[in-house]
Length: 303
Image 1 (cartoon, rainbow, N blue to C red):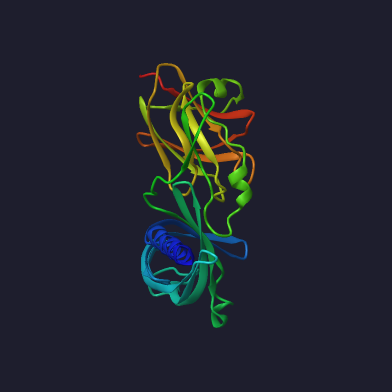
Image 2: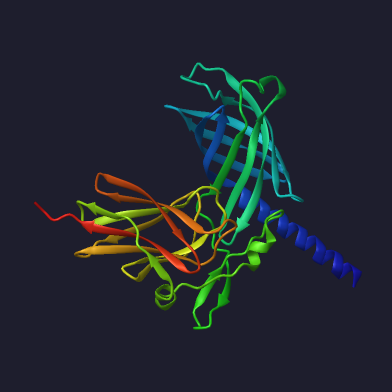
């Protein structure tokens, strides 16, 4: 019996280690935000990581100002907290105007969170002591590219299968896993109040819709309806866009955001970018468990 127990324990530990290696190894995309005085600047980041045992190596590629930079990173992964601690590395100065600007020596940590099929890294980079007067703290938020489908499934009352996101990482907000999840359907959509949104007019008969979490990623889950029909279901708003191509009907068209939960910070909010040919519109959508945020789109009459 004891032998069986220890074999089971060893297999469990090996599976956890393999899972962490699988999740962390890969490409992560997002941004770093720094503040100096009253000015905010953003680093657009790609972090490529490789985990071997608890050792982390990789490359941080980032775009700042008008230039692209690349630097090697290394560190240690702590499985108890799901945290990566980075050894000091060079980062271009916040005040850089060209490639000859001085570097900042930074270290810091990122914590892994998984939410259904999505994985995110949150944390900050801190200047070393001798650099603290000229280099600000940088808050980092990254999302893994091409997340794998690991969402748990639950039967709805109608018999359909709906994805129910569950946080599985250390230090994640476990209360979120118990949060009310509302399956999307046309009837559920109709039961809520439609908030009449902005009307935009475009020159094309097709558009591309990109949806992001508006602000801090707080695990908002949504479905999107176009002219009261579902076009995207059970989607987690994050740092990488939900991309939805749409063909406009004659007259006025409606895009509605259906909130399946309220995330960690109510209400459920999204940044919606509409691409129509050479036109681009940046719009905010907000929905709750009682209301549907909407955008109205109309094609301009040909001249």
